[in-house]
Image (cartoon, rainbow, N blue to C red; front, side, top):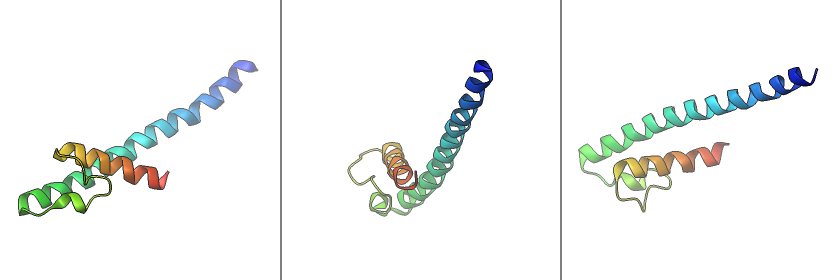
Amino acid sequence: MMHSDTVQRAMPVRENFRSYWILFALSFAVFLAIALVGQLSGRSWRSWLPGAEGVSSMFGGVKAAVYTFMAQII
């Protein structure tokens, strides 16, 4: 009985972990597309993304924006 209880509790944690990374990957792809459009058009795209204002690299800015976005929704 003790073993089945442990398995039932471990499953939701694994599902939450997987859904977190799926959400992270989708958000990263969307914010990266926004940053690429801004970069290619020559605009200041860092002000478009939340949390990316102080980061110098594009990937760092996108990553900061995703973490800021996810902190707001979770």
